[in-house]
Image (cartoon, rainbow, N blue to C red; front, top):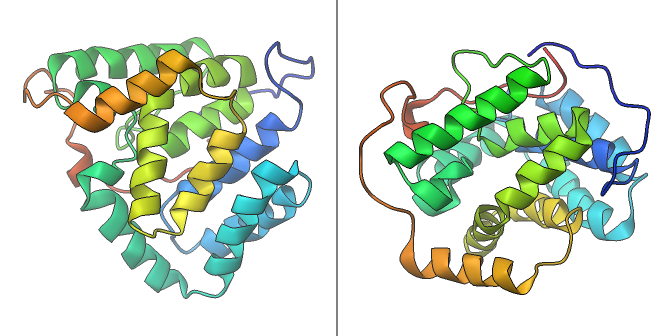
Length: 223
């Protein structure tokens, strides 16, 4: 992605520390590759500067990751995010499934990024949570709106990871702590999605690969 200049003015609806929280969360939700230890160290140092409800779950994850071999984490990452649909990290999936409407939602996200000067790689889908968080870190106002727009999916992912006993549930708990408390209609949206699941129509996604077959995104700073 192209480098973006971090905004120095305060954005309505966000706090200055939101950018750092979202960047740290993005680093920890990326695939644990050979650079993961560096990302982990940075996220650990950032977490120590954040408010308690955001920092504590992040530090739970970093403590676990520091005590786990990177190869073991990578295996768990694939087993969790690639092989369990209910733990899908692609946010538009929760509302639209693999339908034509999801294709439109993905295009909207790409257009939002492009308007901010970002260009996604060909192997990246714009709705992967790590990518959305990275964007939010660089453009807090627009990023916060995207996260709130996909709040129901975020909460479903958090609950699914928690049910699985996944260490990444702590990272999702930290993400939720950066957002406003759930309003009544948002709670209803979460309950509806949990009850009904995403649509199953398999059309309209010719220009996007299925998330199951995508290579793991490499995130962690503008590219």
